[in-house]
Length: 135
Length: 135
Image (cartoon, rainbow over all chains, first blue to last red; front, top):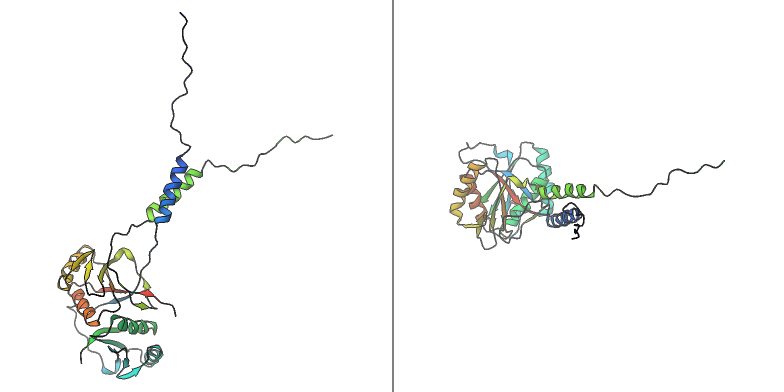
């Protein structure tokens, strides 16, 4: 009887040709889902509740009031928002110990207070306080 | 006497390391991808120029939409329980920054109330999240 010879078998192996393709697929997925989301905010440090209140001279405080009607008052003088920065810069230059007190009326929109805070920050003021205006 | 060129070079770019490069990029994008975990509320953030970039990994967001609803970590809260939640968070991470994502139309008295609750929780590092406006 004739012996049937088995055909020579190639050693088994896993095809690696598609590895790069798979990696590319994953890469494209991650590239397209990555969002470098940035957040911008105006940072302030609130006074703690236990802290001692500090007395400051009346002369060193400048009150800026944001009204519910959209008006802004610097020491009760109506001031336009676009003029505010110039006014503040002038006052800060005249008195380097100046503390700006931002007082917002309770009915005024949050945007009004942010508008004023924005100008205060832009004018370079480092010392300011924020509170609600109460009569 | 004529010299015969012995070398004939074939131009080819080696593609063997392609897979490695792709994997390198893949690992980079996998490592830098942050999947957004918090839904938040739908708010129109106030516009301001002077917002600074906030380190997101230190921020806990407090959301308040135009209807005055408040969420932290997608849980709806009464304003009275904000202090409790934040006290807990401050214990876990004393470096915490509280990002206030508040709708620009909210009356300021609500913000004042909220800031008072933050002070109760000793969460004094606050960022008023804003949209960046260029003038």
